[in-house]
Image (cartoon, rainbow, N blue to C red; front, side, top):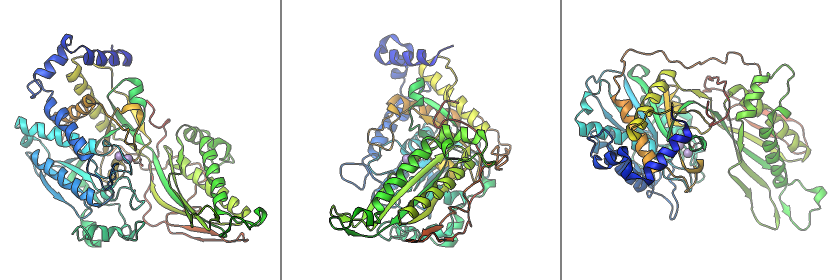
Length: 539
Ligand code: GLV
Ligand code: MN
Ligand code: MN
């Protein structure tokens, strides 16, 4: 049996001693695909395309491509051309998603969907999202070059989703949620910072989205067999264990909040410290509260019959919280601000634990704001429950990944690792439509959402080969029962549904403890309970 360390040594050896490695020698001599390795398409061309897409940016000097921006539209055209080059029939839908489909032998069979997203964060790396799209297109291009594309026993469709990061509208999964049929009509009216809403952003690009055609975007679940996604790991585990690929057992649930703190704007030199209602100092205390709660949830959550040990244990292993964006008004060094706004991104594997953490967080935030005589508005901007991958799809992806690594190294491999994902993925939205499975690809230092993001060329190749191996499998066309547990089962924690429902604002009035609460939970999705440990840890 080859240990991970031995595997890593073999990889390093094959890189530094190419002439002594039969596998490497045959790979380079037969890069046209005669050896089943297809390095020209799956590695060289895929890496060139990743680099090319990485230059398609709205900003000078760094990568930024948000929903329906000019660069996104250019990226969509490029991806569409690559899909056509792979023999796929293409179209762009009403939410700006790019589709490429081949019908195979039976156009009415349930389709395999493969996707990831074409948008990026600000100052992004070139692999997040793009790797999943390009590796799928490349694998299908190999089938085209083999002449087997039309022999697929079911339709296969690659979808490049228009929005996963949620940078422009603070609402992730606009593209995949529309295809999965879980995007509420109200999403069309969400505005960006300059007041342009989702509907206008699409119309500016000649996409005539209406309420009616938003509903038409939803795929019929009966027409879909399953969804798979390749993505960079965005964490350090695969590098740490020395494997290029891993399969994903589940994805953490997440909530995004927008916190607005209002105080009394004033002169920095004249207002005595004891008379200030300073939203900046209050925000600092709120952010430290968030950090403390997320570092040590067991010190904050009560055990008074509402939380059990396993929930708190799960939170202790997986809860992560981030304030990534903050702005102040009027933002001048000699002015006590009148208002501070910041975001909170909170994630955990356990949905009930996440709700319990939000409940505690919101209660304690209101207490701080009341003590400081400032007003707090907490808006719940986004929620996605945790998702468990389909066990059969995961086994098939694992088999495909092992086969790919064996093809590249010529060695029987240890089983590829099984990971949990702390990052959100389009697979979360797609799990509302069909069974999902994901393949993770090692990235250098676990770094992502940064221009330092990097995947080795050979790992891009391994990902493409794994998708190729997956496609080559004879797929059982019997309908399969979704393995996802949709119940909350043993829910035992007090949760925050009353505390911060979706789109609820809770205002603490100056000098008053009176709470004005308005809530509506319509459109909230049923949860999926996950009872597992560390985010991005090997299971
Ligand atoms: C997407 O990358 C996310 O997890 O925020
Ligand atoms: Mn991503
Ligand atoms: Mn991302």
